[in-house]
Length: 98
Image (cartoon, rainbow, N blue to C red; front, side, top):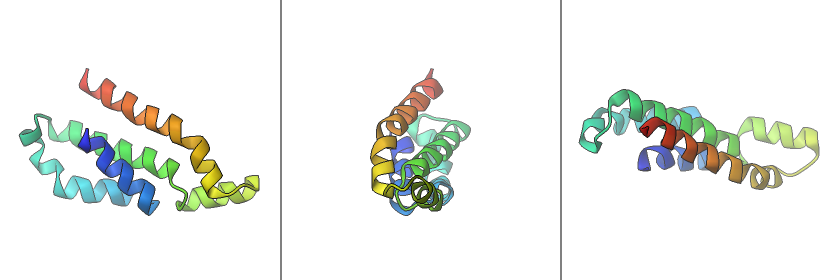
C-alpha cells in the first residue's frame, strides 16, 4: 500500500509524478524483496501512482494551464479529479496483486 500511496502523495504535493517515482524507486524499490514484491512490480506501482498523483496535483504545470483554459481554479479541478484518481490508484494496486 505504501508503494502506491507514497509516490502518489509526493506527486500531489510536488506536482511532478516523475520526480516522486524516481525518488521512491531509487530509495525503496531495491528492497522490494523485503516487502514480498518483485522489483518490477513495486517499480511499476510507484511509477503509475506518481503519474496518477500528478494528474491530481493543483501545482502541476498541466493542471494550471488546463484550469486557466477552463477558467476555473486549479483547486476546483483537483477536487473534481480527486475521487477518480484515488479509485484509479486503488484499482491499479488490486490488478497488480492479482
